[in-house]
Length: 257
Ligand code: NAP
Image 1 (cartoon, helix red, strand yellow):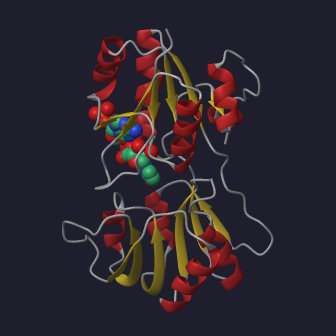
Image 2 (cartoon, rainbow, N blue to C red):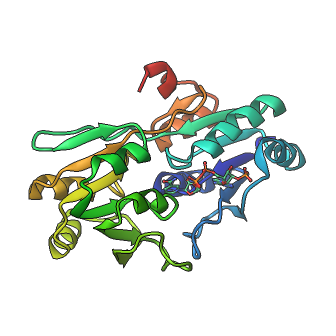
């Protein structure tokens, strides 16, 4: 009997949950539990970490999971790598739903960097007004440049004091639109955008807004995850669940992205 574990936290995962529910498949949707009010799902829900690879192996066995779909954010590399290892141990089928990375277009002023630390180093030492569109988890790296002003967009109001002295905080949940992001960036006099190369449509508006305003973007590349089966759309994942291996593409590691 097929039983699916869907690792979520992205808008693509939520779209896949609808398709899985509509197909009447037996599935559990899993959130890390990072946001106070996660988007509700049409599937059975569990929240919180599994306890590393070992904990995930135990969970897969106890819950008799036959298929894992990793639809986490491309920067959730720990979860993705745990999924590869745990599914290997437990003999469970795994595929990742992974949206293509964003590509620079005409008029874009992007600097491609490999890490957050390189992004910090690439900013001016003072006087920049930075749209830091990277979530709440990695803000402390920017404390090395406290004389810039940082506009943070967060899903929940911060509970602890922010690690940066000079900030404005915008509380909002995507998807975002270009007009809204352009107005936001103009209102805050943004001179630089720092973005993770998440791909997908939900967070893309800031990049088009930056293009229209001529604002430079520091684009952080995706972390590497171990080789796994990668599918690019909800439809392809549904095909895989139905037993077809159509549309399979090489993992990012194989493509050298
Ligand atoms: P991460 O660093 O890869 O994961 C850290 C730990 O959180 C994992 O080892 C696992 O704990 C737990 N975890 C992560 N995703 C989980 C899930 N879907 N279900 C159950 N446990 C999960 O991940 P992260 O970057 O902190 O991201 C956390 C969540 O936020 C992910 O679900 C991701 O899709 C979403 N998200 C992340 C970003 C981002 O920029 N990183 C952006 C938007 C959304 P155990 O080891 O205890 O199992």
